[in-house]
Each structure stands twice: as structure tokens, then as C-alpha cells.
Amino acid sequence: MRGALAIRALILGGTTEAVQLAEACAALPELEITTSLAGRTRAPNAPPGAVRIGGFGGAGGLERYLRQQAIDRLVDATHPFAVRIGRNAEQACRAAGVPRLRLLRPPWQRRPGDRWTEVDSLAEAARLLPSSARVFLSVGRSDLEAFAGGGQWFLVRTVDPAERCLANAHWLAERGPFRVEDELALLRAHAIDVVVSKASGGEATYAKLAAARQLGLPVIMVRRPPPPPGPVVDSVAAALAWLAHRPADPALAGRST
Ligand code: NAP
Image (cartoon, rainbow, N blue to C red; front, side, top):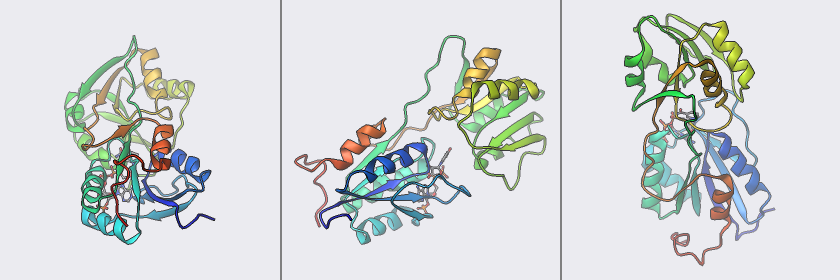
């Protein structure tokens, strides 16, 4: 049982790190955690503790939720490319006076042998692809539209089946983690000559980049959008320490009851 003095925290999830943070919090009786999921994935990895699913209705809806649920702290542990919810969280926490922390996994680092071209958007990635290319596209379902109509052939991998895939494509619905040897086999089997990836970071989907390096394949890497202003940590341990800290620290004591 959690005590009446428990710290009520909201984790904005949809990532491995959010699940890991909820798991770590479950061991601390002073924390009462709810994880929020957008509801995009059919069978999301279930974190321990309370889970709520679905959008809040913009920044205003999230602000109302924070007040109604008397949330003391919020960790935005969403994906590095989840721009809208991050902005909403920043606005809502500012309005409700709830301390907020961004948990952002470290980006991948370029290694010797990598042939990455960095671009700012999926549209720019699509423009760089020769029309004859055989492309491995491991992005989200909602990202596919940028690649329609270019004439390339695509191997598309998404977590859940896409309602509409690209016309000229072979499509796989698979969830990581992926192994380098399997990614090598996949790239070879489909005679892929270029990989397109978002700079998501994380171990679960890094193997495609190691495989591309081994095969000498070019990778078009879409840069991360900048996070909203405010404190950022890159590890679950640091986010846990922030959540569990009893506020002598005025930055955490911002919310009045
Ligand atoms: P987004 O564009 O930033 O958010 C779109 C809307 O979805 C938000 O305005 C919000 O709706 C709702 N939403 C997003 N995350 C939510 C959460 N954790 N809890 C409740 N509502 C949420 O996000 P997205 O890029 O579509 O990603 C959706 C989810 O998938 C995120 O939770 C993210 O962590 C996860 N994800 C995203 C990617 C990616 O590449 N973008 C990859 C892997 C996982 P309201 O405005 O109605 O509140």
C-alpha cells in the first residue's frame, strides 16, 4: 500500500525507458506512479502500476488531468520524435506548476565505417533516394506517407500492421530487439542498397545500423527534433533519482497542494 504522503507521478510513456522507469519506481513505496500511453500500439509492453490510455485533448486537457489527479511530478519519457506530446507536457506543467523532467535516451554515435547522411526531416530523406533504390525503411506507420510516389522499392518494418502501406513495398510487422545477424540476413535477402532511419537511439533497433556498416551500405539518418526547454536526463537511474527526491530542492517543490 502506498501512503497518503506518496509522491504522485505521471510518466508519459510509449518507450522501453518508460517501462523501465515504472519498474524501478514499483520498488519505492514513496512513489505512486501512473503511466500514460497514447494507445497507438495494439499490444504495448505493460508497465507495472496504474496505466491510462489515450490522448488528453491537447495541453489544456493534460493540465486538467494534472490538477484533477493531483500529480506532483511528471516525467516525459516519450520517444525522441514524439514532438507534440512533449510540447503539450511543457505547457501543461508550466500552467499547473508541476515539475517536469524529460527522459531522453542517448542518441546513437557514428562509428568508423558508418556511411550516414544526416537530414532534418523524413521528406528530405525521401528526396535523397534515387528512384531505382531498394530501401529499408524502419520507421513508424505514420511516417510512411513521405515516401509515397518516388518510384523506389521499400522493405518496410513497423511494430503493428499499417492500414495502408506503400505501393511498391514488402512489409514486415515486427517488434525489436533485433540482432545484427538477423538484420544482415534481412538486408542481404532483399538486396537493400540504402537504409533510412530516424535517430531514435536505444539498443533495441541499433542492429540495423551495425549491419549496414558491415555491408558498407549508406544510411540516411533523420536528425532528432530539439526537446522543449527544461531539464533533460538520459538515463532511467537519473529520472528515478529526480522522482524520488524529497524537495529540499526548490525546483521540485514547485507544486502547492
Ligand atoms: P506525438 O505526435 O507527440 O503526439 C500526438 C498526440 O498523441 C499527442 O498530442 C497526444 O494527444 C497523444 N499522445 C502522445 N503520447 C502520449 C502519451 N504517452 N500519453 C497520452 N497521449 C499521448 O506522438 P507520436 O509521435 O504520435 O507518438 C505517440 C506515442 O508513441 C508516444 O507516446 C511515443 O512515446 C510513442 N512512440 C513514438 C515514436 C515516434 O517515432 N514518434 C516511436 C516509438 C514510440 P492529445 O493531444 O490528445 O493529448
